[in-house]
Length: 121
Image (cartoon, rainbow, N blue to C red):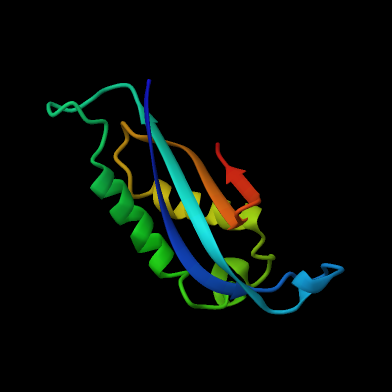
């Protein structure tokens, strides 16, 4: 099995309804997102998939989330944009872009350097 990882960043604000603490108020993060993909076969160039392709897919998804209030994205109008659900949202947005021979192993989202959430299926 071959695996590769790419990461990118975006900045946005959010708030967590029902949270007992500071995160209930609107606040922002500089999010780091890592995507790990895997597959069993390499192409004729010896690559699973071009890093540039994966970064392009990720960049396209994050562009919709950059410099906005995440609670205003349709997906998060009825649920909190927690790091866990952001990771799942990114996963679901990405999965439709990849060819069938490439599986997304996991999407990781960091709110801070010390706080990471991971989603996989």
